[in-house]
Amino acid sequence: MRLIIDTDPGIDDALALLYAVASPEARIEAITTVAGNVDIVKTTRNAHHILRHAALPHPPPIFQGCATPLHRQPVYAEHVHGEDGLAGQYDGLPYTTEHGAVEAILRIARQNPGEISLLALGPLTNVAAALQADPSGFANLKQVVIMGGAIEPPGNITPLAEFNFHADPHAARQVLRSPVPLTLVPLDLTRKAVLHKETLRAWTADRTDSRARFVTALCHRYFHFYSAMHGGEFCFLHDPLATAIALDPALARIETLRVEIETEGEMAAGMVVRDLRPHRETGCIVNVASDCSMEEFFHRFEERVVRPRGADSAESYPAMTQ
Ligand code: BDR
Ligand code: CA
Image 1 (tube, rainbow, N blue to C red):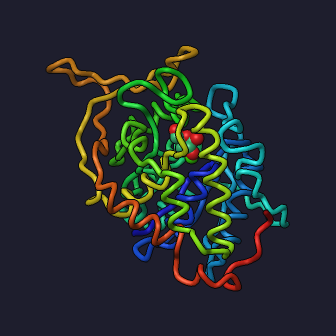
Image 2: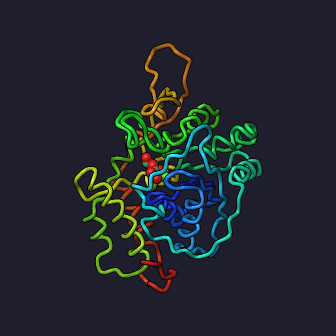
Image 3: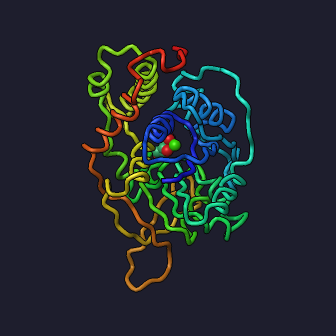
């Protein structure tokens, strides 16, 4: 599958990128960054850090995108992902910033009509900006797969809304109205992708390589946040689950819903409103992943993120800052 990954790393974005680059079925044409979990400079530098860590022979290009949502002030989630957005792991190494995420999405889509899937793991600002700038160019995308939205409350940033949709509700509304086929992987499902500290410990026991250390450091920050909130040592793998389903839709059960996105209100902005009224033509018809084989997902997650080929030999990866 040929894809562009639009992302706001972010701990679970980092895990999702590690999943994608280790997936034999994925051909990543570009990574585009957007402000979300942290500001745009940090999400971009984190994307570079993650690719450096993955040490790919031919890494995809990274294009920096929108710094602010379409019509509102940014909302960040540093309280979840750490001040650097990467659980304190950012290595500070130099990189070159290439701008033009929106243009890159459109260029790659136009050059490859019907071939490119766009996987969106952050607020939908870049995606909406691409749609607004060139609707017919955007229509060359094969599909958009989105981690976002809470079909049923509760949300995770407000009682009603999920973070990615709340951070840019206008973008979410526009993108969901686009004619390109869409699949949502909502919070309702990603909250079932629960990684327990014990599981990670079992996976990484007796390992001292940099991949095991990096993934452990990322997850421990996440465990810390979730234990303060939910009282257990676990975290939710939101973006990795969306990535797994984008790469293999057969993992999930998909249903079709008619929805609309609320754009206003301190708590309601970004809320997914289901239109259950009969005989209506309003709202957007979207595919929603409503169930998934979690056992298979965790098997793939371990294989690709925690134990990719070569990870056990520390020399295969650049040394990481601890
Ligand atoms: C989403 O919000 C972000 O904090 C995560 O990276 C994920 O994309 C979950 O609501
Ligand atoms: Ca994200």
